[in-house]
Structure formats: structure tokens, C-alpha cells
Length: 325
Image (cartoon, rainbow, N blue to C red; front, side, top):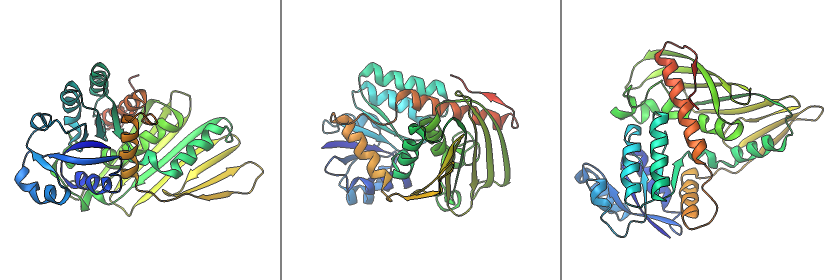
């Protein structure tokens, strides 16, 4: 079992603490870090955490074997460097970083220190996404031509925090809140993005932001793609891959529809799971010598590179932007 610290005890940090309870046979949280520990005392007592006001103080705790980051995106690269230098493996929340250069810097710090870095793209662990990946990799869809994704929810109004709605911290509408999940799915299913073009329409600023972001993508393998996200509307998920002999669609987080030429449509139902628990267990398994963490370093960097290009396109009024490789 891995004894871990968690840095960041806000809304998402608390969700990770709750998810860790069923995973306690593999990983458990024993230490928490908050710049205002007095405000998190009740939460710490609920989960049996020792509290520290800084990463530096937490790293002096010899019982801590790994660290989970649930902090603002812009802090991740520096925090990863600090923790890696202390010899501790890290599971970092998404978005990994806001810029490709920072992602590379963080990865290199972990490689130099010889510690594992995992990125918590929790929807990578959905059985429906795994089934879509198996269909794509099987070749049943023929030559892959196009991929579409849409992920929207109402979190912009129900889970407000100032840093989540700061243009420097969370740019390009719903990209950091929902779109980044689908960018990781794109990287996983069809590989890195080559160029992007965007349209961001705003009706209301934060708090309670109301906007829509649309992205057109070209992938390194020649495929086209579209990505859309709306803040705010009732929760919606769709991930769809098209090929010459078939197409396959996650129409929600637990269903898959397979359409093959000359065959009846097939509907598959996959189990609903706690993806946060699964990502914590996958991190623990990788640390204990089990299966490798399922998101590779090149994939982590490729997703951030696409993210950064989308932000640049939005800032340039929708211009086409090449993705740094």
C-alpha cells in the first residue's frame, strides 16, 4: 500500500480524498497541504490527514511515499520539479500544464530524478472509452477519417473558484474544465494533433460563465476532427470515430454504438465506474511494479501541445495555429 500526500484541498481535492477510501488497499492519503490549513482542519480530521502549509514541509514527512497534485494548472510544473527533486513520484491533475515547454520541463525533471509521473485524465479509465479504443485498434473501421467529441456540463456555475475562471489560469472557455478530457481521448485514440482552428462565443463572463468553444483539428496521421464544449448546459458526452468501413460512438460514458458496413448496428453497454478510484489504483499499481501507468510521457506532452495551440488560436481570434511537435 502507498502512503500519499495530497496538495490542494479544494472541491476536487476533496473528491479525490473520497475516491481513495475504496482504494485504500492500494493507496491512502496520510498528509494534506493547504496554504490555509486552519480552513481545512475539519476535512483533515475527517480523512485522518496531517496538515502542512507548504510542499516543502510535507516533503519532510518520511511517511509520505508519493504525492498527488490537485492545484491550479499554472503551479504544476514548478511543484513537480520540487517534488521530483525530493525523490517522490507524482500524480498530477489535468490540465498537466498550460504550455508544452512546461510539460517537457516537468517530464524531464521526473526522468532525471527517476520517479514516476502520472497525469490524472480520469476519463481514460472509462470502460466505454477502453472499448472504443479496442474497436479502433482492431482495424474494423477501415481507414480512419474523422473524429468528433463533445463534452459539456454545468460546473462553471455550480463549482466556482476564482482561479478556475481566470483567463491566465483557465483560458479558452470550457477547455480546461471539459475539453482537455477529450483532447486526451483524441491523443489516445488517433495520435497527436497537427493544427487547430477555433471559434469562441461568449454570452456571459465568470462567475457563472456562459460560452461555447468549437475547434477544428487536423491530426498528424491526416485525420480531421471537431471538438465542442458549452458552459453551461446539462451534462452531455459524445466521442465518435469514423472510418471507411464503419464508425463507433460513445454516446455517453457507458455506451457504445458500432456501425459496420453491411451489418446491423450493434449497441454495447459498459459498466459505470468510479474513474477517480481507478486512476488512483493505476498510479499505485505502476509504483508497485504492476502495469505501467496507461498515459505515456509523449502522450502527456502531445495533449498539452494541442491545448496550447487551441489557446493561441482563441487569442488570435480563431486563426489556424500549428501545434508544436
